[in-house]
Image (cartoon, rainbow, N blue to C red; front, side, top):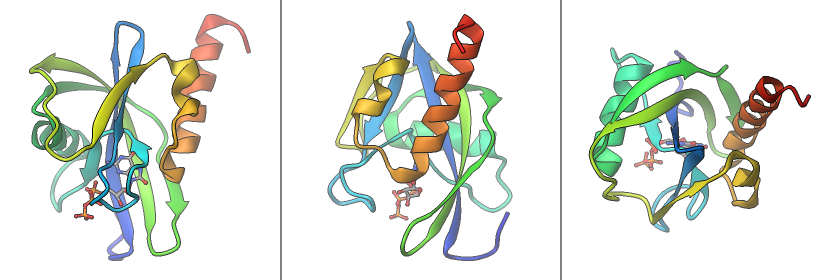
Amino acid sequence: MSPSLNHLHVTCAIIERDGLVLAARRSAAMSLPLKWEFPGGKIDPGESPEECLRRELVEEMGIHVSVGKSFPPSTHHYPTFTVTLHPFVCSIQSGEIVLHEHAAVTWLPLEELHTLDWAEADVPVIEYYQRGCRRRRGSG
Ligand SMILES: Nc1nc2c([nH]c(=O)n2[C@@H]2O[C@H](COP(=O)(O)OP(=O)(O)OP(=O)(O)O)[C@@H](O)[C@H]2O)c(=O)[nH]1
């Protein structure tokens, strides 16, 4: 993990349910205001990415998730900071979503995720996810 203050290591949860994927909209008060993202957050010192995700999902949305397979980390340079996203496919184990930080959430089919205005770091994650699903369906 980079010690640089301007390089954030952030987990994000790709939560699947009934063939749909959860997207969360950042609030106007957050950095990258009103952009869509996968819920998650900065990894605390001494915390594993999986522990971080479980903690963040409780804090942000009041849900308990089980953490599944990971996608390759994705690094993006914003003008004032760099973020490395550590994505994991997750499912909700318990709880109903109550938004503590985000402005909104929506459930979308994978093919429609690109219709939202995503944080730029998420775009390669979505593309990787879509490619993997297409391969599993045998369509490219
Ligand atoms: N959780 C999450 N953060 C993301 C994603 N994509 C992305 O660029 N980020 C950036 O990674 C950082 C995550 O930090 P965070 O959510 O813990 O912190 P924050 O900005 O809400 O809080 P802060 O402003 O108080 O530090 C934010 O700068 C956010 O904009 C994503 O898919 N999920």
